[in-house]
Image (cartoon, rainbow, N blue to C red; front, top):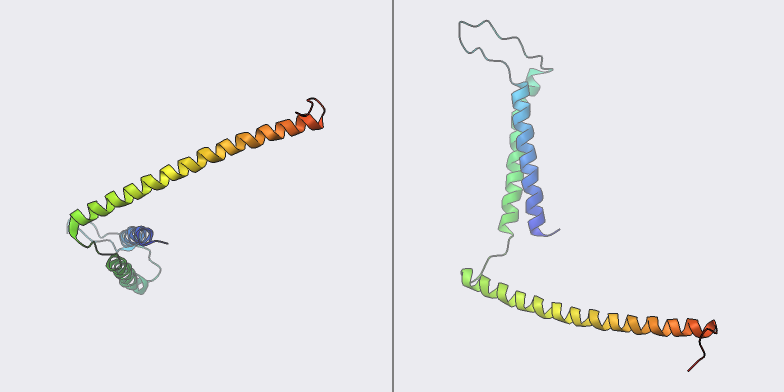
Length: 137
């Protein structure tokens, strides 16, 4: 897998971890009394209070690890030497090379189509000769 695809995958992983972390924290966090005028909020039926205290640490560690992997992938990207002008020159060179290869492929395609046409004609003649529908020349 190329580096750009890896970066996209890592970005998706970070987004999923962030989404799941916020959702879990929102779902499992204990209720808070907003004002002394309101009654005490009902207890959140969590299975284990210690588990809730540990979840943010584990999720934060997973997010930090994913961010470090992303940073490592970014550091592995090749550096652009020479600035924007050099990049534009390289793009123009690659485009010219692409055009030349495209023209060569087009010529080969046309030659292959002509050869196919000849083969079909010869096959038709051979089939006609085999069926004695047409006398050989």
